[in-house]
Length: 143
Image (cartoon, rainbow, N blue to C red; front, side, top):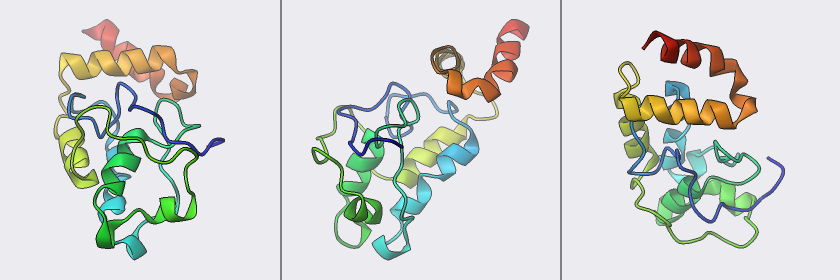
């Protein structure tokens, strides 16, 4: 990550958004959300970059995990303070990383047409996702 600011709003496929279909990201991507629900001292030290624009901290991650307070305050943002602070939630978000991960992983084996369309949009827009492109676009042709 080259910058250290939080996106002003979440990307269209942010795993923390309530309106993003289940199954857009790979299971291991959703698993990355869970450790930030741990008590502060047990959390990862590293920040969580936006999936779409990794030069920024993820809006959903920063907002969700900064609003829990007390023993669940984000360790990463204590160390890596974002420029401009943490914006207010721009859209409805899950209350925790576990909730977001549970939702996101629920339909991975049988994603909805909306989830498949979101994946295809991501692959067309972001060349850095090239590694997964062939498998998803092959699925599109088979549909």
